[in-house]
Amino acid sequence: MKKLGILIFLILSSEFLYAQGMIDAMGALLRSDSTEKQIFLCFTGHDQDQGFGYVLDVLEKRKIHASFFLTGDFVRGHRELVVNMAKRGHYVGAHSDRHLLYCDWQERGKLLVKPDDIQNDIANNLAELQTLGIESHFFMPPYEWYNEKVVLLAQELGQITVNFTPGTGSNADYTTPEMPNYKSSDWIMTSILQREEKSGLAGYHILIHPGIDPRRTDKFYLRLDELIEELSRRGYGFKRF
Image (cartoon, rainbow, N blue to C red):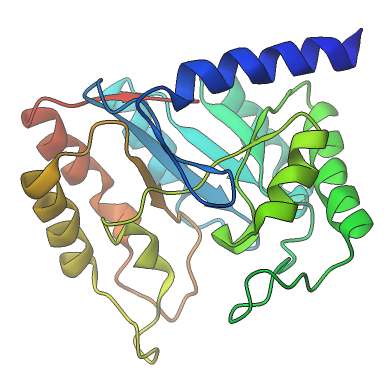
């Protein structure tokens, strides 16, 4: 009966969220309902935690519910913080247990981890959340990198795979100055707002990393309040999964 319930949930959730949304070639949800002027703010956490308190305070001030995708390692090290997220009404979901790189960067179809080990990694993350009374049905893969096999393995565990919507550049906030692909917070903010002006952000999943390598002193999460203020001014609301 439990498996049947999960299957029904997945079907109903898929029909609701995928309508007018965007699914990639691997089967992951990249964008939710584009007919609603709503944005999904998404945050991931693994081995860095500097910005989570600030982010939660901004969301509380703005009365916004967001979505946090956390690894098992993060949950084990921050149990009180994770419980607090859920109590505040935020969505808390899986991001893998150990933040393993499942797929090759160049050959995306090539798995670097055995299928059983991938599924165990996701299952262990879900089990860690369940110890806190948190049930997760949306999963953002580690490194936001996956293939069709990973999506299917997650689906077998009752998970809908989601990822950030391409085009805003917000996911580049992890980069550090010595990287060739480094993007400053000014560049990221401009990129988001230019994308909004060009095609709108309805249903977009905007990913921000509250835990950043200390070598990046220009933390984009510190611009969250400014971002919310401007997008609210442009008529957007905010939703969680």
